[in-house]
Length: 137
Image (cartoon, rainbow, N blue to C red; front, side, top):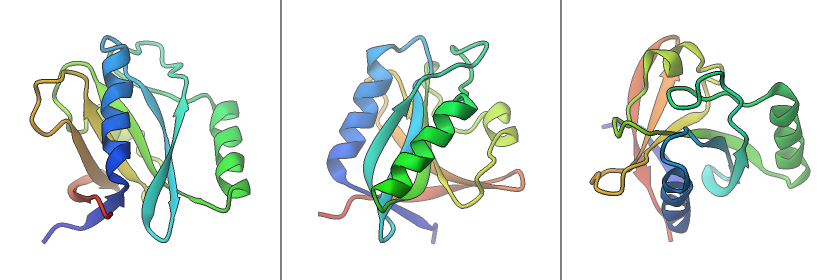
């Protein structure tokens, strides 16, 4: 059975909305929580050279968000970004830049007609495993 990642149910809808707001650009940010449950979305600015096909968070912003997470007594549990082309599975670029092996990588399809718009993956040493997304009450 696949590993699972837990996220508050209302955050799934928020992630889908973030992707829908500007469907031609990948949105991105961090996901934080405690006790293994994601409870917070921390949006970031996508500074990638080609934001239609990749995402990048500037180091200064990444460090600021990490400090914010720690100050709130939370842990960074995931990283999210959207895929404008609707294929919400890790691209080769996503795999190459998966620098946090313990994080869940959430990928959101920007198009609303996709049945499984929010998916999560574990990416470790180039290996991709889809995670079961659970939404506790």
